[in-house]
Amino acid sequence: MKILLPPSETKRVGGAPSPLRSEHLALPALRAHRESVIDALVGLAADEAAARRVLKLSERQSGDVQHNRELRTAPTMPAVDRYTGVLYDALDAATLDAAARARLHEHVLIHSAPLGPIAALDPIPMYRLSAGTSLPGVPPLRRHWADAVTLALAEQDAPFVLDLRSEAYVALGPVPASVPSAYVRVVTDADGTTRALNHFNKKAKGAFVRAFAEGRFVPRSAQELLEWAGRSGIRLRTTPEQGIWELVVAS
Image (tube, rainbow, N blue to C red; front, side):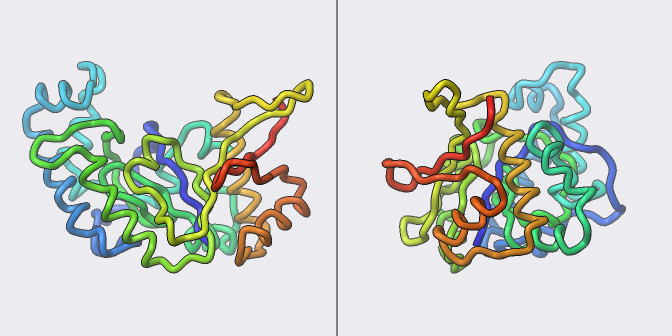
C-alpha cells in the first residue's frame, strides 16, 4: 500500500554534499515535470525582488530565494528528515530504527510542490514553493502536475492508497479512480458530536504514520488496514461518504 503525505513549509537546513538528482527520485516518469519546475524556480531566483513578489516573501525571508537559486547544487537530506512542523515532529522519523525508516521509504510518498510525490528517504534540498504559487514559465501547478501525478500513481499498482494530504496537494495529483483509496479526515467524537480538528490534524497524521512504520505489518487491502489500526489502538473508520475515512482522536 501507499500513504500520501503533504509536505511542510518549514524545513531543516543542511544535509549531505550530494546534489539533487531528479532521475533518482521515486516515480521517475515525473522527471520532465520536475525539471520544468526546477528550471522555473532557479530562473526566478535570479531576480530576488521578482522572486520575493511571486513567492510572497518579506525581505527577511530572502534566504529562501537563495535556497531556490541553489536548488541544483545545494546539500540534500531525506525528505522525511528535511520537513519539520507539527506532522513531521509527531512522526519524528530520525528516531525510528533502520527497518522502520525502510518501511517509510517503501510505503510513504510525500507530495512536494516542485518535485511531485517523492519517497520518504529520497534526498532533497531546501526550497521554497507552495502548492498555490504560480511560477513564470510553467502552467499553474495544478494543471502542470495533476494528470501526470495521477497517471504515475496508477502505475504504482498499489493495492490501496491512504491519502493524508491537504486539499491543496490533492489538487496537484488526485488518486486515480482505478486505485482503491481513502481520503482521511481527522475528527473528534467529543460529547457524542463528530467534528473536524484543525490544531490536532497534522499531529494525528504524523503519529499515525509513525505507528505504521513501527508496526511492521503491511496491509494488503482497506479491510486489513482497518483491522491493523484496531489492533494498534488507532480509531480509523469508514464513513457513509464514498472514499472518505475518519481518524478519530481525543480533543
